[in-house]
Image (cartoon, rainbow, N blue to C red; front, top):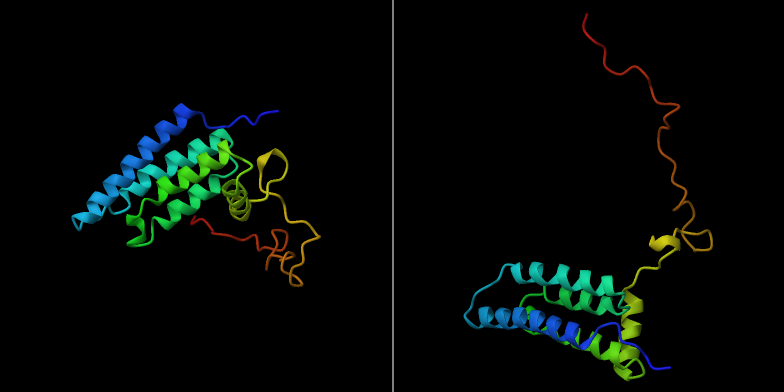
Length: 154
């Protein structure tokens, strides 16, 4: 059975056009000594993350890592978003390649363990924690709290 990629050629072209244009704009701004004040990051990060998560691409953590790396001064001038998207698309189209295997390990390192219904998995008793770390009791329970409150003036 042949692998069916989650990102089609047309979708990949549109993503590369958008992300590439934003990266080129960032390089041009840096070339002229200007700063985008995270405007390009705000324009790109939600769009790519929403799209990749909506499509169910398991390697969306790579895009997250590249967008976080873009926040580092002077490193953000590099076309990291385009490189990250190229890794994601290549790994999606060639799952047996070395790039896909490295990308899968990176995606597993940045993913959150999910429980039933897509919610983060609850902390289970099998997890080793310091004594009392998960059994914090409030200082005053609602049953023991004083009931006076504010008095109204008559």
